[in-house]
Structures are given as C-alpha cells and as structure tokens.
Amino acid sequence: MVEPHAEAGRITSWPARAKLNLFLHVTARRADGYHCLDSLVIFADLADSVMVEASDDLSLTITGPFAAGLPTDRRNLVVRAAVLLARAAGIKARARIVLHKILPVAAGIGGGSADAAAALLALRRLWQVPMDDSGLHDLARQLGADIPVCLSARPSVISGIGHDVVRAPALPSFALLLANPNQALATAEVFRHLPPPLRQHDPWPGEPVENLASALARTCNDLEPAARQLVPVIDEVLTDLAALPQCRLARMSGSGATCFGLFDDLAAARAGACQLAEKRRSWWVRASAVQGVG
Image (tube, rainbow, N blue to C red; front, top):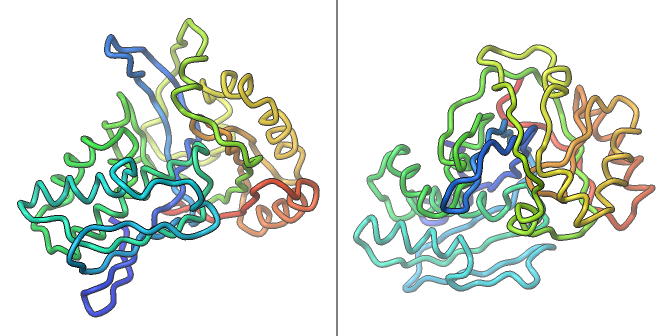
C-alpha cells in the first residue's frame, strides 16, 4: 500500500493517483450487463489528495480546480467508502474528509475510484481499524470495479469486471504525457456504443517486458472507437500526441477522454508537454513519472 503523510496520528493525507490503462480489452458481456475486461494498469505521480481528521460526525469538503459540481453526500464514492468501512468495523462514521481534486472528472483515469481507495486507506489508519490489506480489498469490491486495484497503486493486470487483480511482471522505466480536451465522458455511455462483436486478444506476457512500446503495439483499447464517436476531438488529441518528438505510442486511457503519450523518460515527456500546452491552451496537459517501474 502507498504510504500516507500523517501528523501526530490525528490527521492523515493520502494520495489518490491517476490510474492509466495502457491497454484495455473488452472480452465478454455478462448476463447482468457488466463487461469482462483485460487491462494493464499503471499509476502516475499525478494525484488528488484525501485528508482525514477526527470529528464528531462525517463530512466531505471538496477543493481544487476540478471540485465544481461534485456531490459531497452519499452520491460521492468517498462518503460511501467511509460509511462502508465504519459499518464493517462496527463503529460510527466520524471524520472530517477534505478531497483536493486536481484530476479531471469523468476522464478515464480512475479519479473517483482512486479517491475512494485513498479514503479507505486513510480512514483505516485514522480509526485504527484492525483490517488487513486482503480484507480491505474485499471491502473495496463492494464499492466499484476499479477501487481494489487503486488500493495498491502499482502496475497490475486486471481481469473479469475489474476485481481480479494480479501484480504485473516488471516493466521498464518510462514516463507519460497526459492530455484531456476538457470534455467529460461517461463510462456507461461509451459501453453503450461499444460495437459488436467483441474480439479475442492474446494475454499480456507473464514475464518482464523489455520493450514496452513494442509489446503495447500488439494491444489496443477496445473502447477507443466508441469514445471517438462520442467525442470526436479525441482524434485530435491522439494525433497531436503521436506527432510529438520521442513519443513511442499514443492511446486513450479507460473510457476517455484522457489520452496518453508514452515516452522513454520524464524529460522527454515534459518537453512534449510544453509543446502541446502551447498549441492547445484549453486542454489539460501534464507530464508524469510512473509508480513502480524501472
């Protein structure tokens, strides 16, 4: 688990890192409407933050550039995570939670899931809940498909509806350039536009990967065509990323609309970010290192 920042055991601040799908294969549609996926997931250094402290009741305050319009009641996964953990621990949910939101919303980078995972980890420490990582993982499965993998925030291969998580074989060092055209895109809407038939893909290698761009070139994001249909500017994002010097691969993450460029190192990604931000001043553009690679 990612280590938090704590002050005197009373206030805990936990990072909620951006989750990127380096590939995403939709393998089946279940009778209950859920889709089965295979995906290689990594986590950027870019992160929201969740701060918790003792309080007489439960409250959520949201700050930051992407706070506007987000609910602070039980419609928010962070609040639901707090209530679920308290119920499992047999205690009353009492905490003041502050979510600082720097990641775009409905952007295909797991922001809401990462926020909920960070809340579970921070509140487990604040409330001194005697629950191990396995138990917390099982609890997270009740909240949403992406939340279990966000608990560890390390490179992972996920399958099924997102609950089956295994650590990915070693990946070489690389960096990312993330770009979002500041257009939200609902995951459910993308899946509704997913065209049949679903394709079969080879599994991700079970041994360490030396040339990541080459390995990823044999994969894809099956949601990309549907997302591009709904938000055509994604075409421009991918084209602009692919045209940057030293960009090894350009692809959409998750259900979009955030896309990423793969670079050999952070210096190259930062240079690309400067160039793209100058051209596309209205887009959200960030370079980032990656957790747990190299």
